[in-house]
Image (cartoon, rainbow, N blue to C red; front, top):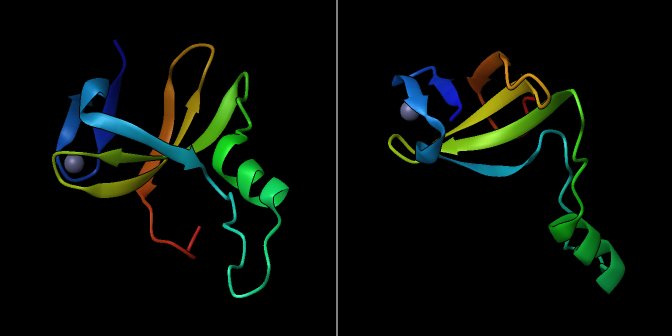
Length: 88
Ligand SMILES: [Zn+2]
């Protein structure tokens, strides 16, 4: 089992977190028409990186969104910071 370091709660089991998506993924601008293909790609396509991945995770205990960089091969967590929409 992986353990992720929450900046607020400390080192916790991965079961307390859920994956919220790739870091940097941009939601389509819904003030303009969005095609089914664009919307489907936004909802379903992920980078699925082998190696260094930048992801957004949510810690369910504190409800904080975290920007987490980890190696998907070694499962090492390389960095974790609080995620604020628009800042990263
Ligand atoms: Zn936390």
